[in-house]
Image 1 (tube, rainbow, N blue to C red):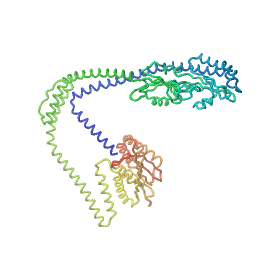
Image 2 (image 1 turned 180 degrees about the vertical axis):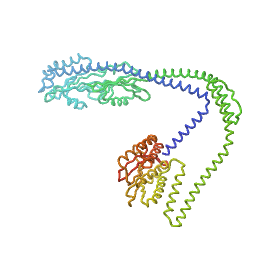
Image 3 (image 1 turned 120 degrees about the horizontal axis):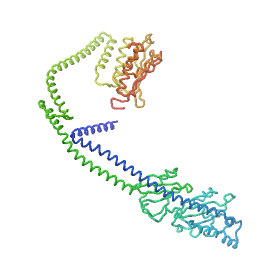
Image 4 (image 1 turned 45 degrees about the horizontal axis):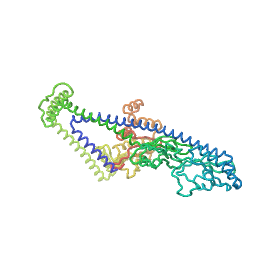
Length: 635
């Protein structure tokens, strides 16, 4: 809280210094500055708005263009996927291929040659008829099937692949797999066999309805064939198309200059965050460069196709246009400001004469005439200034006559102070006499009465500590106990930390006085019982809640509702209500509680005030709600 208070004080000091310096600037300069601000701010706002509109339109055009490019690429991808699916279906429907894969015995050489010229050549012709297909491979777990490169392979060669179990699990369905290299399973079995081109593989189990599958067909197509735009050899320095597979890997043409400044990891994070979106676009930054990404979902491949466009060039052009517009406007404002300066000099010439006249008045010269005549605002101001000079001379003469009256008022004030001191001293003397005579009850009552008088007359502030108000209540109860023969008891349940709570002066004493006045009416206290007034304090939700509860006669429901309704009333409405009820103000008027409620709301706001609850023959409770604020600086 101390740091916050220091910051507020520094802010107020800064505001005061700025206001002081601004007040020292001439009117002519302030008018020109206001003129510039009035014109410059709308121009700057218009420039920013125009830039944003141009920017949004530019982004919208880029998005539309790239959506068209992605859609064309998606059409080509779907066409290539259909080609691969038809190829897999033809393989699955070839009876000679199934017979070869499901051979129940080891084939003779003549039978191998027959299948070689039949099933094998059928698959090769199928591949050659679709030049975009890179490979057609069949993998069989049948030990009777011999490997015939490059089509027929043993299934053991792919059991180590990460997609093998998934293909078996998806029997009867097509599984699409992205691979960064095209590996030959027979001719080369090492790291040197990794080809430079990636591929998309269609994998499908043959004859999945049988007890054991006949084999697995693999139809491969290189990235360059299935994603022609993404892996185009024609470089584009402003954009690059990429494909994000289901494993979060990006595939694109490697070695392009565009990829050098692109943070692909950031792009992957942005795309994964939009996994549920079929298409869309977003802006992101990689280093200090802005980019726009337009993406399209490839459902069947479980991948996303994205075209990343650099926004550096479009933004540079837009900023250049915006800056040229702003500079042109500033130049125009400068020209208008110079013209305005000379025009204001002519207009404010009479005002400067009036300013010099005021300086003479400040130096004590009141006997001169202002040489300004004519109409207009300045002429009228000069006329009123002449009248003011005349009035000042009259007031100077009157001031001498009023000095005697002022002295007399000071003497009267001093006399009142002497009377107050005389009264205090008299009470002290009476208190001492009572103690000497052994009248301690009278002595204590005089002490309480003196404390109450000092508290009432010493009104240096509208706020006091809760401890001071409680002491004043204690003095009041002590005096009233003389009247009621000690049948009043004040109980305080106040945590020590809350004794410094800031409360309006004389805000609790009227509540306690009301409790004594109405609680003792026909209560058990007159029959020998004790009227207990309990004051509690608690902090709740940033507020200080003070509860004053007595065990007096209470109120019935009708009286409580009438009191509750009158508390927030304005004075005129309240007095009309009282007159309509035909009740004198002395009997339960509620004026004391209304005054407390109005003062609390006036000082603290409409969210604060008092509330009353009561039950006839049991209790009355008044709740005072205040802002939690300690005079020692807490809260």
